[in-house]
Length: 213
Image (cartoon, rainbow, N blue to C red; front, side, top):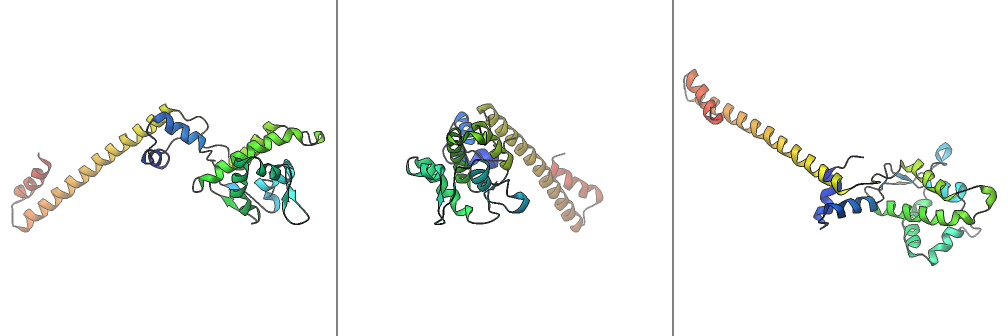
């Protein structure tokens, strides 16, 4: 994934993240995903959702008889604040069919999904052995529904390259805009010379004067 200076880097600079290495680290730690996070889904799409992962593919929670969520993942909320915070972010969406959240417009959702993923990986070894599940399967399943992480291994050099690319493009845009401005000025000068009754040679010279040629 190529970095977008204005979208990915400048907001961090504006927030006071001063070094390129720190910016790279912040981007990696953002846990942003390639696609929106499908929290719930219906029909033939329901298998590609966080709800399906947590209740069927890796059964770490289920709806109890009193219509509240129960299970080892829910139990962790009382002992792990990061899991409690993460579940607090995603829980409201579990009640809405077909709900998705954008990790780019709602960054907390990406970090919440990461925290839940790590928690599930810790629970999986304690699930019934006949399920034949392994922690690494959790990462693969999450990547399958989200398209994987947007920034897996951004470095300071990547940040510098993105900034340089932006600066180069800006300079080129400025050069083109300057040409347009000169051209518009030359046209205006020529039109003014014509309106004032100048000769064709004088009209041409009026435009040349703007260009300095």
